[in-house]
Length: 241
Image (cartoon, rainbow, N blue to C red; front, side, top):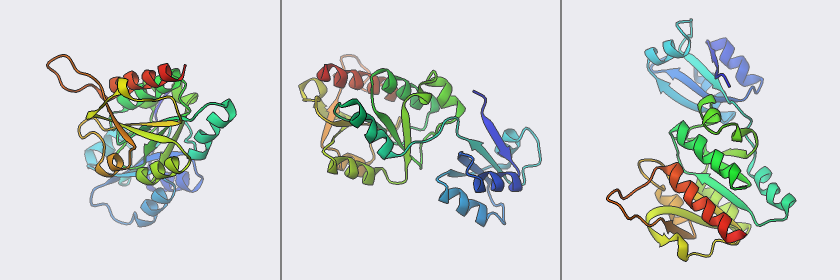
């Protein structure tokens, strides 16, 4: 899927007004007169990033961008309620994957691909400091982003609290957690995978019901985020079948 890039103040503003599924808006650092556009982008749930003139020139392939460019999402976002409806329709305990600030699009795409293969009901990502459903993510997911629902939320901690209020047990993945083989993973569950560099955010971790770890037998003490996600997802699958 080709990445759809819009540039120029009027073009981006009209795309935002028409709710064209803008994923990210790039604003040139120091550019003036873009207050209304930025406010509308945030209102629509788009991620707003301050970038250099060189980055905008690259995005617009040298076209007249006027200090702004935008990327259209490669797939539509769902709501958390849409994800919760999946397990209700299947008649199975909820199984949801939460990606906490996964910024590498290849990691996010791989997590979405594995989530679909493992039968997860959906994936939840934050609006801030996270890759979105860009073409790179869509491509890495091998098309899975078309089949598994992905919701993008303003506040991950509040979303976790919402899931817990519905009887869903929330598990975080960190190196100092309980070995995953010792945990009962058979009930309604959400698995939170932390960012590549920093792991789980402090408040996200504090709101998890249990922290899971993966046994390490070599000299390296951590795994790639998408690899960790895959190992743990299939342990949930094993516990449920």
